[in-house]
Image 1: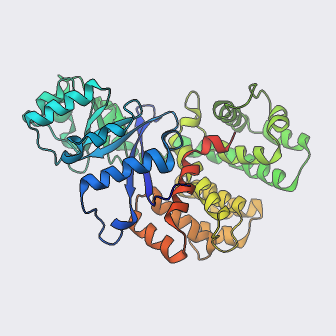
Image 2: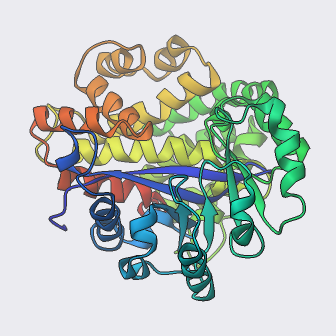
Image 3: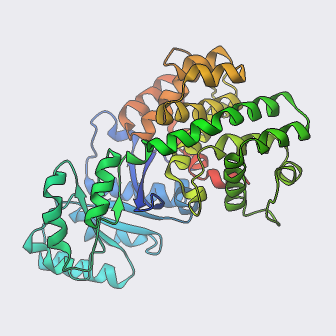
Amino acid sequence: MHDAAYLIGRQPILNGQEEITAFELLFRSPESVSSARFESPLRASSQVILATLSAIGIEPLLGRQHGFVNVDADLLMNDVIELLPHERIGLELLESIEITPDVVKRCRTLKSRGYRLVLDDHEYHSSFEPLYDGLVEIVKIDLVKTPLGRLPEMVERFQRYPVKLLAEKVETRGAFLRCRSLGVELFQGYFFARPSLIQRQQVANALSSFLTLMQQLVSGAETSEIETTFKQSPALVYKLLLLVNSVSVGLHEKIRTIRHAITIIGRQQLKRWVQIALFAGDGHQGANSPIMHLAVTRATFMEELARTPPHIGSCSPDEAFMVGILSILKDIYEVSVEEVVASLGLSDDIRNALTGGKGEMSVLLSLARMLEENDFDEAAECFEVLGIPLPLVLECQRRAFNWHQALI
């Protein structure tokens, strides 16, 4: 494990089909916890480069996706930025950067070397025209600073330039649909975690079979019984096979049937797949569903933190994973906790965690949520109180971000 101590955050960037196409990378170092800021932006950004390349690595952090890091004027003009692999990492130019001939020249150089350039929190201004016309690929529009009512004017201004618009802080499905109808192509925000009524109904329809399957897998039921339950929920069968075939790149053959899955993967792994399958997107989306990424990253982080000493009490890694998964059901799909917990006969610790009560499992869930919300300062303080070193947290984050490999 690398001896650097950072907390890394990822915010998914989605296309109009709600598929993850990239991540924005965010971070916090322990030195910044007390002051909530770094001594020097250049030093701070250099640290995230080091953390990304050395402590976690590009593949675990991003998988097959692209990543973007924030760049201020100092870092933009510094050669250290070229430590980042241009084929995987793009540069978000912060709104504080003043456009000068030197900045334009530097952007042209970076563009020629293969870097994707983004304007962060941007509003149209004529001084940026040298960047709009072929240097910058994406322009991010903050929906807090630029309300929806002003968006048509903004979209029209940029239509003459070869740029894609990205709406950030998209918090409702209505805002997402409005932006998409205006021609915005990329999106950031938590809207994807508030599914449509149809999606919620689909989960509700599959939930009964899901709970029965989980009970059977936990109790060691016969394969024929498990198959019979699957046959009662074609939608869950489809999601399971879609998920297994899209993620299990290490398998030598495609999974064709549930019996085949049980034979090839084994009971323990099938239990994990069933838990995740409920969140798998439909059709071509598969393992790129943002809700599934959120669910499995949370669950895997909790599992790894429970498994790695110093342990938080006596939390079982399997139960920690289960809490992570079930908390997404409760929070996103508005499924009754009582319905979920009673059907599976789960422990009081799991029930308490899912209902906001106290306990060690509740602590794990709270820590996972803090990191998802990029509340790095509070999270770092909690880890310090619990005696959990940040390098260990970073390693658990690495495994959680790389959950595809953990499931093979």
